[in-house]
Image (cartoon, rainbow, N blue to C red):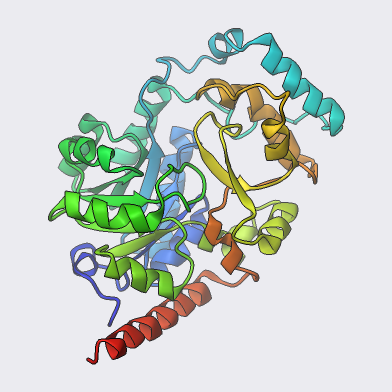
Length: 365
């Protein structure tokens, strides 16, 4: 009961814990455990989005869940790989081929996750159509929050949310009309900014006014959840915590799982080598190679996607151990075992309850 905040009643959930994952079973388990599961669908074809959201709905019944799309401005208009490849400098292609040769990476059997299609206005529109036609309850914008997409989602009765990493992004998100904000700090995995969670969350809460804010970035324990509520957030948004669960690791490369289990809070690095955007991941030979003095600067999205997408797919497909990696936040250092989603949720709730009780005791309540 200590964890119940206004968004619980508003959204029809038991606990103000939002779980982001790229796996259907994990998202469904988060929702079924009383939280709010959010499916990361950015790298999925429109027909896959339709099918996967329908499968989550089947698994959760009438409980709420969400979907997240990355919609950065400035992407090309068409889904044309040839156009992108033609603009990639020869030096970058030579560097990538050098990695293939050095680590003896076999050819992939097909395009990687980042080269199945080109991040473009064309694909974005088709993905949005699939989301809008679905029964998903929440539409989250991971990067960018186009006003027309937000307005349409709200017209369809969906709650809207934007992830932001800087106070200067607040006005743009609010002008787009979103219902909720996620203040995602530097500690976070994958796409993240330069401002720490403790510095960011209170500022976003103040600027957001009546708009609910969730805290993200480095949230790993019940103490982090209690701290987030103390900072003014109405809940938390977690990603890394769910990667080391039974449901999620069933679809992960075992080498990546082992690296995550062994990682400490200082064993991640922010790199643009994954997609062209800042991306926090486990430090491996992949990130080290791109940080070397002779490495070229990563290209902008989607050019970096196309440059490395097939190679990343081959690394995972053929388990090229030195280069296998995974996106993860600094919170990865708190997880040293794989457990079911329900057990992770129960642990977080118990820890948060203890932490909040301790805080009340300190205040003499």
